[in-house]
Image (cartoon, rainbow, N blue to C red; front, side, top):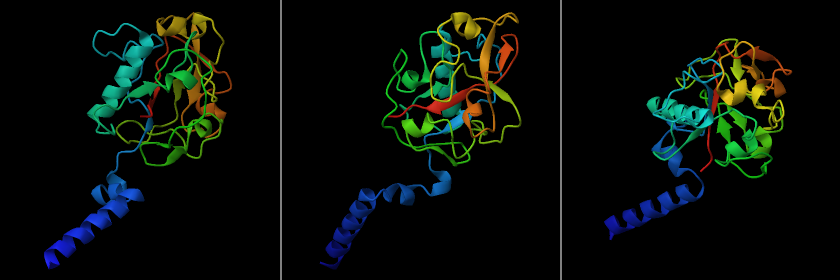
Length: 221
């Protein structure tokens, strides 16, 4: 009877912990939990995203998304084996309001979503709406290795509200991220900013022959 009572107590205790989201904390302490992260890549790439190789994927955005997921996987920051990351990049036909949901197009809803954190486990946004409201409580300034990134810019082509930064012209995004020509440009974000400049640094652009990192963000499951 005594052993059965202990077993019953443990079952009730674990059920209680699970109901209040505490089971995860016992299984994996806060410092070791894998959170939905957003990070700056340690890799730099020209505007054609040539450094972000991932198998034989030809589409620049798909290749960048795959590269983000592989960087997260190789550094142990995927939440599950089926988790995916997407690159914080818009082009002439797609923006981040849709891409973050894993669909094509522009102008998707910003409702729902769960929190995201930088890889220093600092809260960046509580939801889609929070992510797209321009102000973030903590900067996206750590890479996939959880190392602090110094002053730098990132390729984004994206406003802080998730919309395309330069309209619907492919040449505004390094020819939809296929060009490394100095004669074409794309909008940049500012690493370390916590206002709208984190995604669009006052419409600052650079020639597509320049090299910068990109931002990768966990896709909600």
